[in-house]
Length: 58
Image 1 (cartoon, rainbow, N blue to C red):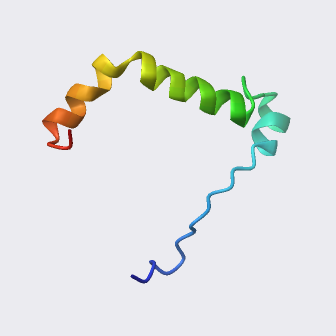
Image 2 (tube, helix red, strand yellow; image 1 turned 30 degrees about the vertical axis):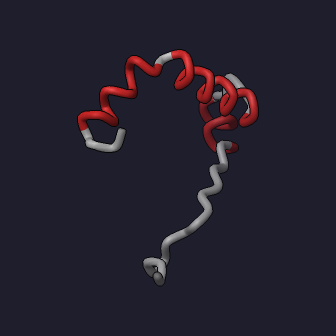
């Protein structure tokens, strides 16, 4: 299947503007954030499983 014209398969985020202009910093680095997100889904299956069941995907 061909991809849409102008569609990026990779999305790179450059937060330097936000860091510089708004004095914003991410709370976690990518690896920590990913690990926390995965753990949240493991710990909160009662929240997301009904969504899959309603969508007929589980």
